[in-house]
Image (cartoon, rainbow, N blue to C red):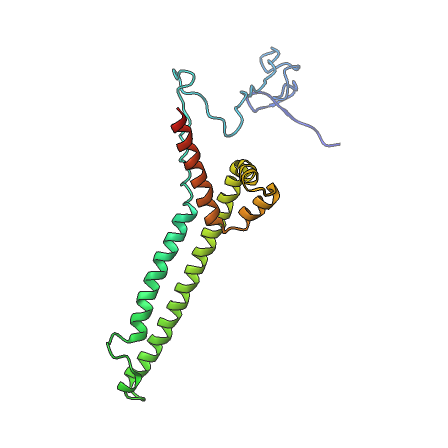
Length: 208
């Protein structure tokens, strides 16, 4: 059986058996060595930010959030589309005319580079004019949907009293009057209700 050696606290071979593993055995000087323990300081969780010394509660304020940009109204979007359409029309017409008063193709030789360039410019100008027309149609749809929504809101407030009053004066049913109002174009409905509100307010002022 191989002989086992032990070392004392100074690293020397020792027969006393006092090792660095514990303090139960005697050391070289005959005293019992105190058990060595390693104190581990409690650490803070990763990512924790301590409060600066002397900082008063509530001193740190959150950054104000930037308000989102307001969405443009339907009328504004339709106006922008029409303005863009007008620009495209102007550029398209200029390209299709070739920048000359007399835009007849017979004035340019058939095989010349100028003729080819003019033809390409004409196609490009035609496409611009088509895009302008598409923009105007989109603008019309945006305005129509906006007017539909606005007319619906006005009907919810004014339609019933108007229909009842008109039906009473002209011997019609309320259902007939409502159907007649809703058959109108949304833009005309808006004008109709605005006129009603204007007349109602004027009558109320005269009664005072």
